[in-house]
Each structure stands twice: as structure tokens, then as C-alpha cells.
Length: 343
Image (cartoon, rainbow, N blue to C red; front, side):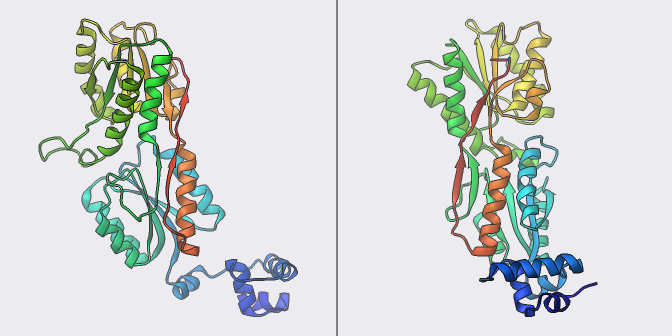
């Protein structure tokens, strides 16, 4: 296999110049850069990434860490994340925490292997964990973390704006009796609850606050707030009781803002199973913009988050921190209404 010295001889430059071209660092004349790239192509040279890791003490690996890898929200985020990482010649790894111990295991793994950085999504990463990673040379970006950490890079969507957009859209469609179905706003009582139900309250609160604030501005009194669960296996059971309350109300709602698409799917299934027409009798609007909104009939109207762009922005931010020491930024991306058939 060709070595960096072979490339240098072929291009008529120093080994250091070849290294600068490969790493895109320092000033290189255009004609010199092209000559080196041509030599690399002719010799089919591949940089020794293991040796590079030993020199830089940093692995060109980026991790995307999530609480539940089967959650359909993550597919487009991970695609956007991988697309930027691949373009910048980084390898990506997908990590499913699913327990407090696994979360700690991954942090130790990142430190042991000296990876470049990690994006933590829908978790409850604490300041001391971020500090430990940074001290070990691992950069971090947070997405929808339970606690907003000052000075730590983050990429989020505007959940309050999304809740407000839901209210505004339903009111613009002529609805005045609009209820909100959401996940837990505080930690439930008891110790025997699933790991991912021990946090993720912040974004539910933000969506409900956005909805409530917009309804107040529009002069419309909400027709009720119902607590469900954002995971389908739990939402299905909880939805039965919510449907009983809604259908038994004296002035039952004509529209529901479901604060995520899983809840919206569960409500549609339950109501249609009872002979309620959606949207004829009750309009339903979800939140997230999952692919399944276009796979089911009727197509679900939803507040869509720019999931692919979230992943791209997180990867760009992470690489900027790793390679250029970029200042920490907090990016908030706006959602939009994806109009379907349910509202």
C-alpha cells in the first residue's frame, strides 16, 4: 500500500504538505493542492487513521445518543447527522441508552476510545457529565435535553411556537372547543416507571405552554387538558380513558391538539373504533411530523419539526467545535404545519 512518503515523492512536495492537504489545514497553493490530490488518486493512497488517532489523540467518530433507537422520531435526525459527518470524513455510531447504567457506559466508552464528539438527544444529561466529557476531549451537543445547560452547544426546535401554531391553526379552522392531550409534565410518583418516563417533561411543558398562551391571546378557553403518554405501547391504554372523558363531556371538544404524533395516532384509532368520524366529528392535530402521518389514513395534520435539518445542524456544530474550537451556540429551529386530512 502507498505511504504518505510515496505521495510526497510523486507530487514533489514535503510530507508535511501532503499532511496539510489531507487535513485541510494551513495555506496550500491551489496548484500544489491539485498536484497532491492527483498523486493520492493515482497511488490509491489511504491515510492511516489509526496512526492519525495516535498523533491527534482523537478518533474521527461521532456518536448520536438517544433514549430509544426504535422511536420513529430519530430516523430523519440520524440521516441528517450522518450526511454531514460522512461528507466531513467522520464515522458515526448510533447509541441506544434505554437505562441509566447504559448511559454511563456510553460516556465511559466515548472517553476510553477518545471519540471526537457526541450528540445527546431527548436525555437528561447533567452539567457534571458534560464537564467530564470535555475534560476527556469529547465535544458535546444537546438536543431537547431535559435541562438547558448554559454554555453547552444545543440544537432544538421551538416547542412553544409549535404549541402556539397548533392552537392558531385549529382556531383558524373555526374551532372554539379545543382540548389538549399531552404527556407527563412532571415526574410520575413511584419508582417502577420506565427509564424514559423519568425525564422528558420539559418539552411537553413547552408545547402545552405555547398552546395555552396562544388560546389566551385568541380569546378562546381551552376545552380541557388530558394527560397521556408519548410512547405508543402506553398511549393506547391511556387513550381509552381519555376518550371516555371527551365523549362523555356535556360540550365535548370539536378538536384535539395532541402534543405528539404517537398520541394523535392512538386517539384517532380509539375514536374511530367507537364510530367517531375524524375530522367530521372531531378534528385532530399532532406534533412532530413523523413519517407515519403520511402512511395512515386519514393523513394526520401535524406540527412538523425539521428533523433532518436538526441532525445536520448538530453534526456541523460538533465538527466546528472539534476542528476549529467554535464558540458554543444555541440554535432553535422553527417548526411548520404539515397539513393532512385530520384537521
